[in-house]
Image (tube, rainbow, N blue to C red; front, side, top):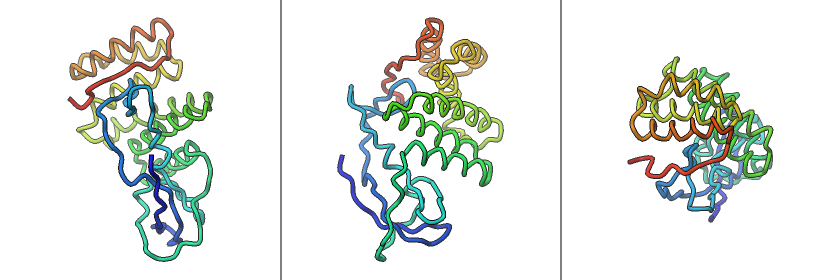
Amino acid sequence: MQLVEIGVKCPDCGIKFTSRQLPEVYDTGIRNSELRQHWGDVKPCYEHFAVATCPSCGRADWATSFPPTQEICTLNQPQSPPHVQYRQAALRAERQGKDFYAAGIFYLYAAWCADDVNAVPQARQYRRLAAETLRKSLVDVSCPIANRAETEYLIGELGRRAGDFEPCRAYYQSVIGRLPSKYALMARKVMRLAELQSDDLIEFENVTA
């Protein structure tokens, strides 16, 4: 994983700072049951470098939302854990324009980053918040139409991974009839795991097929 230091400018306050980012992410097409990309048993953890926080005003957002600059940067982005930065980004998305889909994805990434540092209680809470905001995104139509099916599937899986086994089963029973076949198949597998009260990840291959 090769990181580069990129000078960026905050679109809110105009402060320039240095952000460490991955210039390119290779898509393997392999996902786990939460749709997180991985290479076999090796997790790339690129999500840690897809978020940035302004050291002046505290705006947390996708790193790509901060325009690059060739000007000299004397500040660096804060070293707070990525899962905390994603949480801040989610709160901002809810507060600024009530974009529940964006907030849900930020909470999802926060959960993944919390997993990577064994912050188990935080990861569980982020998953519940992700499921809640993604549900809202289906109502306020902030969820893109192209992402609706995977979002409906993901809501149930996030519940199971958070330990809410019976709500996961009840949710899937209400939506499985309208899920495309690949998500319906995964939903049935997830329901069986929920019956066993298991929160283990399983593989979801060829999710884009």
